[in-house]
Image (cartoon, rainbow, N blue to C red; front, side):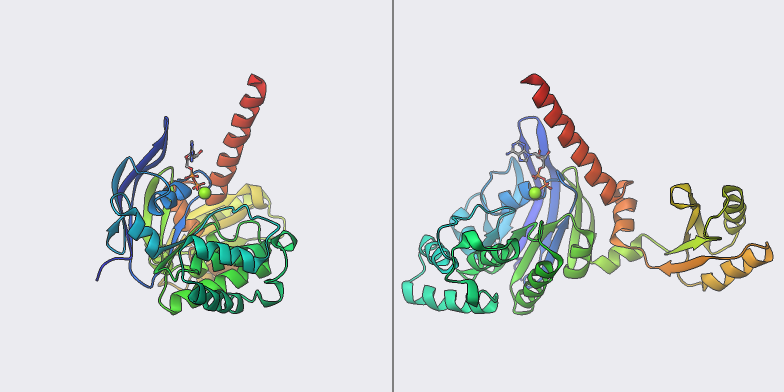
Length: 339
Ligand SMILES: Nc1ncnc2c1ncn2[C@@H]1O[C@H](COP(=O)(O)OP(=O)(O)O)[C@@H](O)[C@H]1O
Ligand SMILES: [Mg+2]
């Protein structure tokens, strides 16, 4: 079976910025694939190379067996692309915008009308289709973008951060729609810097950071690889640090406990990594009880994608986002100073 998308050792620089250093992944037909990474990781650059909007400096990029570099026209025919931010003409109605888009794709008129009616229905745009897009909410606009990307019935739909800036409800609408599309056989590639989004949507994902792929697999495969469950523990509502340290030292000696981290920033909470096969909570509680220490709260959870990200990169996605934001601020400041 031909893969829906093949990206192999993709490289792309802008001047001295290596936006994509070495990115490889494959997507099989009918998969919903997520590209997860913080701002500046190289997601949009990868997508732009895939959609024939940017020319790679190196590597292989293929859609349904067509080369994005040598056969851009065939690639564009197989692909629907929903860009990160779309500037809509606010004077046209939703329907007019879709008609214009259909003409750009050279869709025959009757077929275009039928498809537009169908998409308006599918995306719940009925009441709004004949209103000017200037009156649309963010969520409605995104649904219209989706309709536009799907007009020519692409095999592969590519969406770059489709839910940024949307309220929770609109986000769920988009998620549901993407799942339906996947279930109906369309291959979907979505980028995001939201962990929960990729976790709940993607069949498989690649974690990228600073232009390289750090991990790839299904959400549960990746979580299994990071190892044991997490246990969060507080001894008292306000635990003295000395007491927390005493507990930490003791818990570290338990055979099923891999690691105990004392988080002083969060009121001396203890974070443990424990082997999954054990029944840790009872044993932890008993151990503390024998030391004369009560337990205020105790919870066990599977590793999250954030733990996966942390294991792969040595920082949490949140920290990576903050770092990206502050380097943007610094650049902004420098620009201001140079004026
Ligand atoms: N057109 C461009 N010109 C110069 N630098 C760019 C351009 N596009 C992206 N970059 C830089 O490449 C890096 C990756 O950006 P991008 O692919 O947009 O990441 P993401 O979509 O993951 O946020 C960033 O450092 C960004 O500033
Ligand atoms: Mg981007």
